[in-house]
Length: 506
Image 1: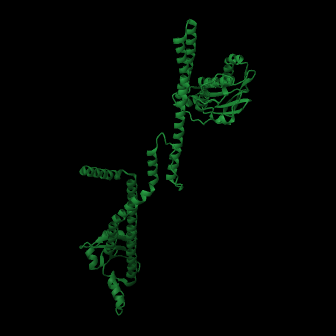
Image 2: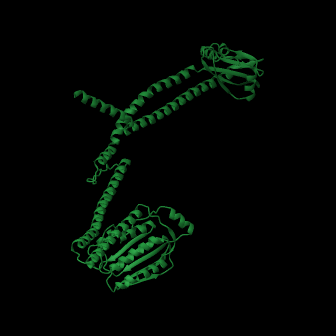
Image 3: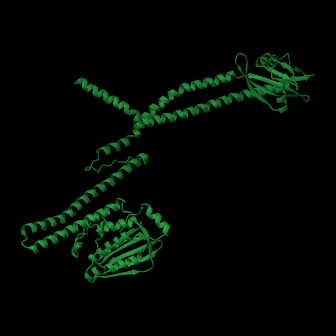
């Protein structure tokens, strides 16, 4: 048993070790190390180049100074270089001896006039090379190695004496400069791994605290379930990207909580709405089965059951239509629609129910109004608005529809003199299954889906809807839809998904 437990612990440790390279903390530390390595290499290369350039410039300056000294100490007589120095001054004699240690002088034809043993070890220039340099009239620099591999920097230029041109080349060993540069490079490269190890360790420890908010987000997400959607993460107050992530996570949880509650409410409402007609149907069938004594009794029970079936069918059809709409499966067929003419036609269709309810229904088109809209969906919108207006208006009241064109919009207003809506319920009237309490005193109680569909139609068309109502005096629904564009633009809009603002309430 102990061996089994030890084996499980070892497997757990190995699994944890295998997960380290895949962890975000490891990747952050590794990225920091790679970045630091690139920076170190770049800095090292820059320093090395700067050091090499500085040493090279120093060697150039020394040879320039020695060349100027050669000009001061040398005179040519019959193409023979003569050195003039105070033999009684040991310092000056030593200086001239140093100048002549690695030197070459030649005439304009390339004939060597003086060549030191040190320069002979480097190799003499050809006559053509000397003529080329004299013809160019500029200082020429080159690097050459002797037989032992020691590098020398050679300055080759023109030496003029009494208007006669001569060639002069002097050299200086630069092996020490190369050694200094190489020593710097080796020491720096030896230091880089130590710095990278230090950077990796620091990156690992710095990444831990930085990732704590992410760990908190993950821990909170693991604790989330349908019963505790109220969990939130407290922002750190730093105002950085992690606080932005925390805020985004909390906002997402707010939306999920709202959606979950709405879903629960929707399920409860659907269950309630479906239960009512089913109860009616079952009751009528029981009446027909147990209490009906004649054909008339059976007929009444069947008629009542059919009414319940019709109500159930209406609820299901409306729910399916609304679900298809909100899921984006209901595609708008936009056309160049005369909104005023359509409203007048719909008012004609609703004259009979309006007359039966003893309500005056009128339409006014203040100006020609064309919108880019789906005719079928706008008809459904008008049907719901007119039905509600007639349903909740007292006999003798009035319902009035007004259409007019605004700047880039078509506006439809449906105003009634009905019972009105309490101000506290206005923000909820477009919610599914919401019905104003006691609003059904004038008519049969609806299912609370009509205005939800109205809101979707308006949003899908890129319009807006707002409501004004006063209890006991009536309500006014104002719908704005985008004005009609040209036919090609309408076709393009029909192929694009709708981007719409939410309904506004007032």
